[in-house]
Image (cartoon, rainbow, N blue to C red; front, side, top):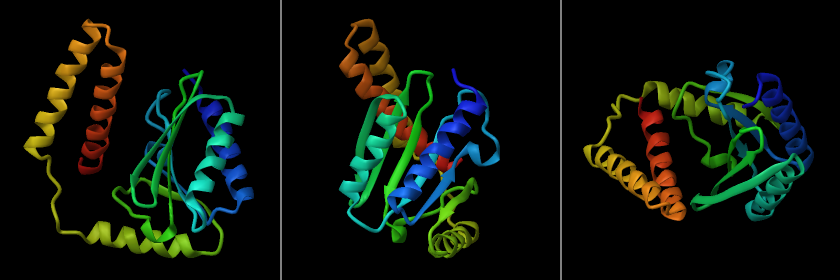
Length: 186
């Protein structure tokens, strides 16, 4: 896999290149905020940008290509929110959410501001964090989502036995979405 040093060097290079492109801010999220869970922990970040998101998405993909990503997954999550995930030969994966400042949100206590162009992120993230911490709404796992996850797992096993790589990847992607939702809830 990759070492903590490799991960940190990559993170610092990405942050530096994004600052040079004029992003509003960069927020590290996930286990990396507290030093990573283990040698397999990926990098997770939210990149705030108030300009042309499609242009910035292409520039971000170019940064990852220049750093040696062999594959880059690009997904539009919602209007004006994109997930760009590069994969590197050493196994490192970077989950990068690209979105305007006003759409930033907090769904976990694991976040820290890496860069804040004009103090806008500091204010936004602290307000979001207050809302998150004061929320009386109890999140819970939905039985339908648990069923869908297990169904996708079953279909993944079948696809692997059939050597149907495309369907197996689709099921893995579906399961990944559910795991991300479960992590937010737990």
